Amino acid sequence: MEMSKEVKLFLGPNHPGMHGNASVHMYVEGDTVIKSRMVPGFLHRGFEKLMEQRTWMQNLALIPRICVPEPDINEMVYAMAIETLTGTQVPERAHWIRMLILELARLASHLMAMGGIGGATGLYTMPHWTLADRDLVLDIFEKITGARIYHMYIVPGGVRKDLPEGVEEDISKLLDYIESRKDEYENLLLKNRIIRTRTKGLAVLDREEAMRLGITGVALRATGIPYDLRKVDPYARYESVVFDIPTATEGDAFARFTLKYYEVAQTIRIIRQVLEKLPKGPVNTRVSSGSALRWEIPAGSVYSHVESSRGEYGYFVVSSGGDRPYRINVRGASFPQGLYGVEKLLPGNRIEDVALWLATMDFCPPEIDR
Amino acid sequence: MNSTNDMLDGIMSVIGQFDFSQVKERLFSLTIEKSRLISLLELLRQSGFSHLSLITGIDRIAEEKFEVAYTLFSWQSGVTVMTSVFTDRIDPVLPTIMEVWPVARFYERDVHEFFGIVFDGNPDLRPLILENWDGIPPMRKDFDSLKYSKEHFPDREYRADFLAEGSDGDE
Image: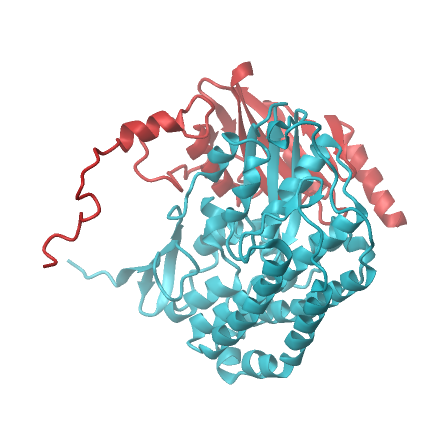
């Protein structure tokens, strides 16, 4: 019998180079991956079924838990969907506070993702620095919402509570601090010889392929198209702030994470404008005349989406007119690249680059498993 | 802004052919027939709705139907279209739209797993998320999650040394 040259390898569900609990099954020949398949499901918690069994308001405690690094997008799309179904008007100040929260979340998430490069390249200074800085963002969250990770702050009709006094100053100081780290980050990340050598030309994604696969976010923008939902389908008050969409044309791993780095600067720019323009006034509207727990939402279907740090994140919400959702479907940004991308685009890469591929493609298993 | 308006006009001329309703400014919903599913989705794709956001299964148990909603997005105009198609609840079959959007393969696999809808032509409808599942597809409305859980994970009788379990042989 002839010996097969193919060897089957498992990456994950527990592996330092793996982003969360998911498993990649690969067939390798020598060092090259020739076939690979994503095996998700380790984080399936049945959120969509659970949501159908809780009232609209009870779900507020549940939804942020779908995505750990960036929970606020869940609250935002859920609130947006309910507001569309009920016709609730959100006060002006609440729109701006929501934007502040979403951008702080993007900042935290991007810092974490930039640290993720360190895990895949073995340069552990990066995660140490970025996660320590992310912690400072979480401090701000704690001041505003009372929680560090799951804020449950953006609610239908506005936000839960007004900003605490003096938090604007704290945020300003934080932004100054993160900006002061610019040179150090650039030296460590963008000018780093090892990172450049390993990521330039790696996992090139062309524009047609990205569009056909439904890939969104940084991976799409790295192919040269400035598609960002904050510009294309603006929500909150993104049409009232000035910011750029960084793009690159290379479409490789290096382009993808550099864009993340440049987006941090744009996020800081947006937050500064929010702090400057933040109007005065109420921060929420009363959504229900009786107990909000028995709030009934008019029947209908609605899809709402936002630009998360990984791409398009959306909820398909169906109400049958009752006090519970009839059906909610979560569109995780990493679904296309996580499942289809791993089968289609990962083969041809070398084993040591698989972790880098996953890190730069923005891949978050809890979104896929739900 | 003019080009945006032109684009909206163009989109309206396409959507206007269907039985549609406007949910909000840039969100439309429309219902299409099962037999024309692929040709109409292809038409929508060519009219600018190049991005498939999501395929959602919905169990309309009162009407004895399954609804499948294809959410499409146009990057040029920022318009979302929720395209619904209905199929019988007994023996539900829909054609696959893999030819139009290859990534649909995985969304369909997900809908198949959680609703039991068969997508004719999709070669890969293996279970995706669940493992060793032996009940009815769990997102159907007649699936009782509490009952399933009681059957498969029965309550254990309380014992005083319950917490010490697993520490056998430590000493």
